[in-house]
Length: 345
Image 1: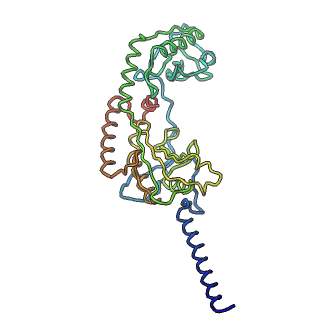
Image 2: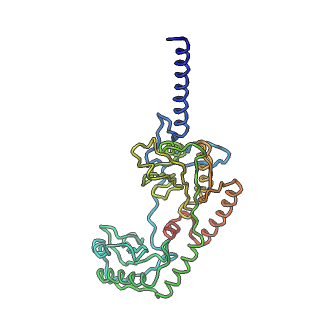
Image 3: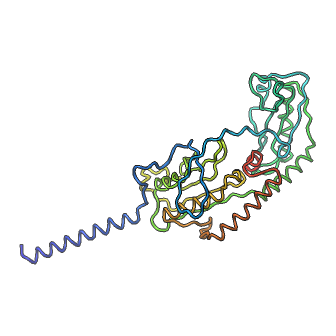
C-alpha cells in the first residue's frame, strides 16, 4: 500500500470516528435526562414530609415531620347540611340502625348521612356496632363542587330519611324545602366565588426529562407516589389529610415499556387552596418547589398558557390568597377545615 493510500485510510478513519462521535453527542444531547443511579427515585408513600419555606434557597431537602393523629370524621353541621331530627319512642340498637341504612350514601351528587345520639357518651356519631341510641338525625350536604342541592335531591333525601325512620320506629322532622334549597344556592354562590385551585407548569428549557429524573428530583423535596401513574403528592403533616401539593406528568410516559427513553417536557404542580390548612403555608411551598425544581432540572415556571411567572406575579397571587383565607375563616369555613374540605369537594 502506497503512502498516499495509507494517508487516505487514516484520514477516512478519522472522519468516520468524528461522524460517530458527533452522532453519539447529538443523541445524548436530545435524549431525556436520566435519574442518578444509587438514589431512590420515589420513596414509600406513607412517609410524611414537611418543608420549611425559604424562597432564597434554590435547593432544599424536606425535613421529616412527626406523624400526626388522624382527624376525627366530621359530623353533620347545620352550616353546610340540611338536618332532619328523628325522634324515637325507645332506644335503638346500632345493629338495627345499620341494617336500616340505605345502600348508597348519596342523594344525587350530595353526601347523605345518618348519626345517632349515643346513650352512654351523649355524643352524636355514625352508628357503631354494640352501641345504643336514643335519637337519630339524617342529613344531606347543601352544596359541593357539583352545585347546590336542588328540589329533586331534597325530595330524594326526604324519601331516604323517611325509610330509615320507619325501619327504626322513628318520627322525622323535615325543614322547609324551599328555605333549604334557597340556603343551598346561597352557599353554592359563596363557594363558587371563593374556590381557588392554583397550578404552575414546569417546562424543560432544552433536553426533555425521563420519568425517573422527574421522580428523583420531586422525591428530594418530599413528594411520594400518588394513586395514579405520573402523579406524586406532598403529604400533609396529619394522617388522612389531603396532600399539600400534587405533581403530575404525562401518564403514557409513566407507563412506557422503557421509561428511560420516555420524554417528559412539562410537569404540573397544583394546589387546591381550600383543602389545605393555612398553617401549612402551601403557596410558599408551591413557589419554593417550583423554583427549586426549575433550577435543578434546567426548566422554567409558567402558567397554564405558557407565560413565564415573574416574582412580582407570584407575590400578587400570594397577597390575594391571604385575603381569600381571611374570607373563608370569617365564614367559619377556614381552608383545610373539615367543613371546607367537604364543601369544596
